[in-house]
Length: 215
Length: 219
Image 1: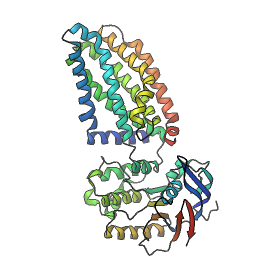
Image 2: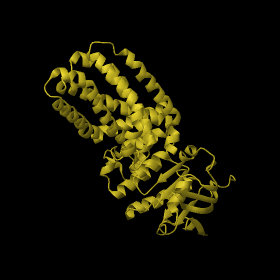
Image 3: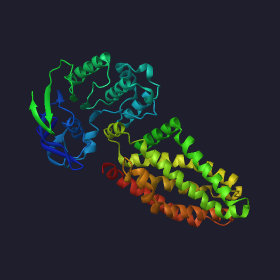
Image 4: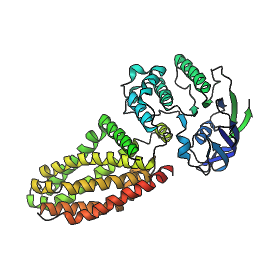
């Protein structure tokens, strides 16, 4: 991988349970950019994000993300440098909103003082002591965003980030993406619908586990 | 590793304190099992004293399996699993933390069950108290082995079905040693010789867990 790219995949294949989730993806991500991955259900959007996060094993091909070789490197080192926003909740339901963020902050040796501003930013300050299980679907997404804010990862991997968000929260996410990319982080977001943000972005279209178009 | 262990242990114990799963599901189940054991043995106190240690550890085995499944289930929600994986926690620390939390939970349950044994199986109070150190050690070893085997059995429907089958050979020596130590304590003998087996097993499972937990998690 050249220093120019934060991630580089060459003919990357991921097979799980005998089924090819990714069937030869070639792509490059430059630092400080927003990349949107679009495609139909089952096209491989989530699988691509999971591969970039070091959550899934590369079956064949080559891949380097944040300097970590996906085939031979220690993927745990990569995981510490990425932030993941998945379909489901990203936290422990029986802990409060605040406790979840404290856990993430302590795990990554981030200052606990970062928790309150993150909650304020996502509009959850009033719900700080509520158990995560009592949050609505939209509030859970906000908590997941706060989790990422506290973590401040180099690479943000957002799987359907607008799901369950109301208009206000979508605006919040758009603003957040502007700030994050402006600060030099790399964002990759999967989406069914066109991303609302007006930011410059690269759009990758996936079909059948392959990149079929880049614009 | 130590910092991660305390972080994970604190988190698991806080979750248990909030959810009360062990308090409202596992402990009542264990107490009920002791009550039924007492009823099955009938009113003769002599029979109770000889059978009580075995029955006690049988119930300990059942509640331990439930507690292990609960401990592993906390981490198995798909979203939580992915997000926590991206925290890149030291697997050895995670193993130790989950073992500490599980051990604390088992000690609390064990104390309740020991009191239940005195009440429902009519074991001598003095002898039961003498057995406490061996019980603490045995439950600690069960927690270490249980955390290791809990990770080994994976996710989905696996833990509930595979855990008892896979873990029983590992648990058997611990349960037998614990039962022998309890019997010796009730008979006024020395339970110390059984401690060696338990202590060796505890150290072995802790060492294996520290070394291999990361591999199990990845697999």
